[in-house]
Image (cartoon, rainbow, N blue to C red):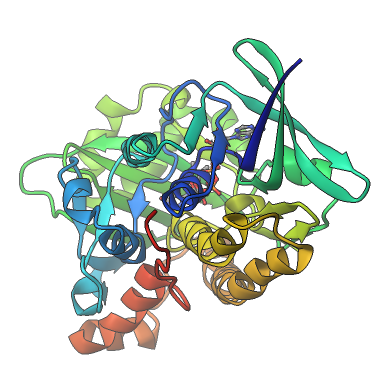
Length: 405
Ligand SMILES: Cc1cc2nc3c(=O)[nH]c(=O)nc-3n(C[C@H](O)[C@H](O)[C@H](O)COP(=O)(O)OP(=O)(O)OC[C@H]3O[C@@H](n4cnc5c(N)ncnc54)[C@H](O)[C@@H]3O)c2cc1C
């Protein structure tokens, strides 16, 4: 079997793994990132690049170049409850270089990071290479066993990072314990055409026990239709006609586009919502970050944001250690200590919103009364900065604190 050696091996070339790999390599650490797919092309994978991530790009001196990639800018958050429209968030107030959410296909974002990484001699990205197991020496993890295009390969490393997403193989192999926080709903993703005169923004719609989110993507609407957990099979069994009429009753100005667009359930992608987190993010030689440490609910679209923030914190804390030697278990625990609080606060908010807003709305089958807070935000524009700050910047935002070597 081929054997490679590196200072840090990262399993998973998603937002957490690519950003962490790039930052560590930039700080002078030899890094090998493994991605099981041959490219980053994946539909509906989450395309939101939040102001805090754009701020990280700004701190890295990459923002200007990054924003040359085609993207759409979301500046406000809006909600329609029945026939009433409310603006409830405004990113224009944020103290960040970019005062908007950039919507960009995730593969463009990851390709961009990969291209930046490839400029560094100590950044190695192995595509079509899937981490299968951990290599252990006594209690300590010292690398991974993977399968690549040329067969099996063992990659020895002083630090192994599991950034392989919500179904993380390495997390399973590590024996670290996961707490499932539960989610009462799933999401169906679908696209609808954009027509001249459409509003260019983010709109959540609530009506008759249905929840629908429309995200403007310049040439199409990316739409999320929320359903009670596990009910997609029943929806499919009821047939396409019934599904289309449900969509038409909630899609407002886009209702007339449903029949000619949704011809098959294959056009609808199910996101099984999971909210969980590890009790301990590390064991000696191994650290989990991003969705591998905490799968987020789609509420607020913050999964990518948190994954990037984990990557920045990991690089800030561990790169000085990795340039000198091998991090201790104590070093790895510092990453959890830093990132656990923001993760808990955001997941806490998501679980409350699921329990007290989404689940009752889906169950009630009628349009709820607009809550007082929604009316307040709509009336006082200045207040809209608070939800925008929570969603756009998160809690305790991370800043790049690395020397470029
Ligand atoms: C359908 C859908 C829609 C979403 N929409 C949004 C959104 O709009 N906004 C948002 O912020 N978040 C969204 N999310 C969540 C968001 O995508 C994740 O929170 C975020 O991508 C987590 O980043 P990550 O790097 O930790 O993991 P991932 O993005 O899951 O990346 C993990 C990577 O590891 C690779 N991999 C997996 N196993 C292995 C292995 N064994 N070896 C090597 N490579 C491996 C995978 O191919 C993948 O590239 C969505 C998620 C889904 C599924």
